[in-house]
Length: 342
Image 1: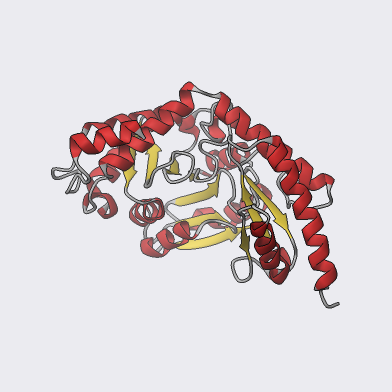
Image 2 (image 1 turned 60 degrees about the horizontal axis):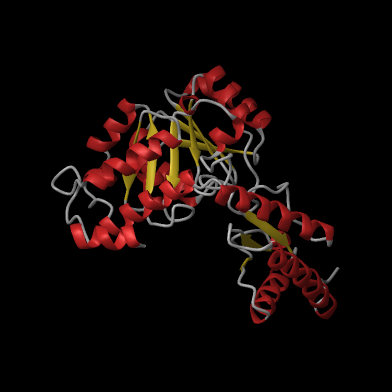
């Protein structure tokens, strides 16, 4: 907060222009260098919105004659980028490298560029993707690989540097890293990281960057300060991971369906299997002092309706255990009150 206030006092509330024109400020370079270092890449470029980052990058890098193969649970921003690019697309079964390889074997020869897109942590289930398998496939079939780290950066890995750190592979094994500043980094915006020629190309030719005002002094400095604290104080990430695992295990112990994830990410679902039950559970937990939002049809299938919990390093085990007990007892009461018709 202090660093952000000082940045506004020094630079004002806006950089007032595209960075290619006159909107470039020192904090932009510092933030991009730090992000590139975290992802073990040569450079990065920061956009002013996370959703627009995916749209701008994919929409600019891909085109007619190209193919994007994406996880079936991929974020809307990826799908919108594919539409903007005008390229072909095919989904593969969620975190299923075998299904992806079957499609690559059939489709790869028919397209000039093929981009595989996955997420580090999936936003609905909180499961960590099998990145080593996707890296193997992209090398085998001569593809590009993109990883959206919106829900994994700042959360997984020993110091929060994402799935690269979690699995221990070089950042250059992934061609395009994407992340958002609005979650763990406590700001607003997004970034693309990768090899220097890729970032230079986006910086000077991608319309979503060239014709957009640069990230504001407040947001840029907030992200830079937050990231610096995360790297200097790794106990925060350790506490977050411990909290997430503990809460996941407490829910499972009480018979709550938490989906495919085994814990370890900041997203922990409590699947009710019915949209009405999810809505009622959220309302009643709110009255008991627990803030958690429902995800219901059509965002997910009705039988996959859920509450989506976001964990942080500031939660205590006592809070998490109380919440798990409230979820179990309240959901049992709702199911008895409103049974699902057979």
